[in-house]
Structures are given as structure tokens and as C-alpha cells.
Image (cartoon, rainbow, N blue to C red; front, side):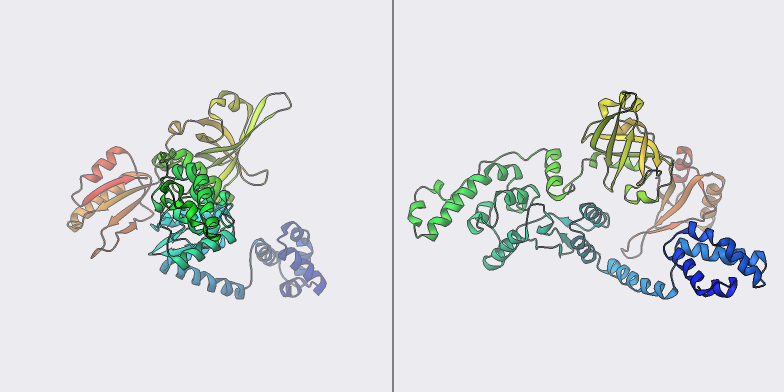
Length: 464
């Protein structure tokens, strides 16, 4: 406001209108005031160039800007969170998981990040889990309240019984000690499906097969004890819950187990349908769906993912087209499948199908979407060009002269790849990765990689 007053002679009221336009991030409103600002600046004795420059400063600030005092206020919690993540990563991520327990997309991202950092994330466990996410021996333990259909009352009763009388010895022991009014069958099935009983040694399929029988016998046992009729169930061992022998069932196939997990947690936990495609994804996919808001319009993309929510519609001319969600480990994005592609690739377009998608990003209709150019089997996607060449050096890097020889060779092999050197750490410390000068861009051709491998100080070479 003061700049508008001093430079352009605005009244306080006029300056406040300009301030509101800046505060509400409305550049179109500011542009309407540009002519008045320049005229006022000229009247104040400023030349046209100075007036333009001063208004451009204001215009840029309307895009995104805040006071230096705000910057300091942001910097302090940013430093605190960076410190915690660097020094207490498991505790930091566990706290974030608890905070975002109701946001399954965010929770899945945090668990993926933890695993990428080498931090194990244990499944829900009736003998280990608390209500919220906790840390045990450097590992994150899934909180029981993160399971769908499992309420706070059921969780409180499980934890209270465990603390009062020790860990549960078996699936049968669990229901001998936990009343079915507190953990009903629906809750029990959710616990089974998400792996909360895995540590007790039975397959999830076995427990689902036997859960009704175990709960019924355990309930009768508790009722008999309550009314002093224990002798009624003291006959053959098969009549007591404690002596029950479960009818073993083979574990569910991986795909079925993962689907059950997704239904009850909101995401895949013990694995992912895209696990077999990990290396292919690294070679072909060129966008990150966790950062899709930053994608530019008409950008070409290649994605491997799982089709969800396929919806067929009819166009005005009567032809079929479809919309669908494509989901990968990091996020999801909507696909627009026009009639020509839908007709020719219909056999591949089905819910839960893993496919490769080629297309262009469309940001003209709100959230980013993909206008599909083709849908193929994942293995048919073209490999993306390598972005970097990595050279791991031996502990003995050789003479300075031999290093100069390698450097001259690399300088002469121009290409599109950045160059990284991997150096062994001292005394067991992690290796150090150093990027070569940005002026060095090398070729990733097989001939070049083979020749680099022949230098005596080179232990390994690869591209990515």
C-alpha cells in the first residue's frame, strides 16, 4: 500500500483495493489498475520504465509472496521437521502416519516412503499394535485404528486385556479372553484379513474358515463360566475352545490376499500387484503420480498401473468410449479413452488389469488427466531414454594420469546423460555419490559403457 501511495499517488482507499487484489491472488484485477498506477507514477515524476518496473514487482508478489517475518515463521517449523526426519525418521514417519490415518492415499505414500528409507513397517498385530502408529526396535508398527471396521471400543478392549493378562497365545486364546460383544465377527474378519493374527502362526485363510466356530464355542465357554456351569464343557476336549483343533486351509493366492488388504486398509500393504513389474517401471515410466499437480499440459507420458472404476459411455454419434482411474504405487490419475482406442484395445480395458498407458497430460479440465493414445501390455511400452550414467570406482582409484585418461575419454563421448561417480566410504560408512560437472554429458551407448568398464579403477558401470 505504501508503494502505491508514494510511487503512484494512490489514496489509502485505492491502495487497499490494490492490496486486496494481491492478497486474493487476482492478477486480472491488478492489470485493470496498471494504467492508473503508471499514470500516477508519471505524475509523481517517475519515468515510464521505472513505473513499469515497480508495477511488475507488485504483480509478481501477487502470484506468491509474503513478508520476511512470515518467512522466518515458516523456517523454524521447517527446520524442526527436517531435524526430526533426519535424526528420528521412524518416529517422525509414525507420527505422520497417525496424523493421516483417515487419509488412505497419504498413509500409503508415507508407508512407501518409510520402506524406501529402509524402515520396516509391520502389519497390525494384536500382540504388538497400539491404537496409533508406534515404533518398536526401529520399526514402525501399524496402529489398530487404521483398520476399517475396527472401532476405538474394540481396540481399547484388546489392548486392556493384553496389558492385564499378557499376550494372546493363539487365535482361540484371543476369543477365550475377548468378549464377542467387544470384538464381533465383522471386526474379527477385518483383523484377520489385515494380518493382525499372522504372528500367531495360522494362515489367514484358516482363520477366516474357522472364525465363526471359534467365536461360538468361546462364547458358550464364557457363558458357562459366568453362571458356574464349567462342568458342562469339561467333557471331550473337542468341546472346549482351548482344546479346539483348527482345520488348516492353504493361504489365499497373493492377488486375493492383497485385494482383501486393500478393502480393509484402503491400500495394499504386504505387497503390491505391481511388484513383478518393478524393473520394467523403472525403465519405462516417465511421470510421478504423487506429484501430478505439477504436470504440464500436453506432456507426453508413459505409465504402468492398475485400471480401476472403468466406466463406458456413449458419445453423441453412438460410439463407445470410456473413463477409468489408473493407479500405481504413488497415486492415481483419470484416463480419457476415446472411441478409436477403446474399440481396438477393449480386451485390455477391465478393472484390476495391469496395463501400460501412453498418452498426453490434459490440464484444461481441472485436475490433470491423461488423454490416452494407446493401451498395451506393460512389456510393450517403449523404454525411456536413460537419464544418467553411474560409475562405481574401486577403493584404489589408480594414478592421476590414469584418471586424466578416463576424464578425456568421457569428455569426448558426448550424450544426454548426467555422470555420477560412486566412491566407497571409509571405515564402513555408506558410499558417497558425486555428480560430475554439469558440463559433462555422456553417451549411454553400450560401446561407451563397455569401454568405461575397462578402466582399471572402475568396479561397475550402469545407466538409469
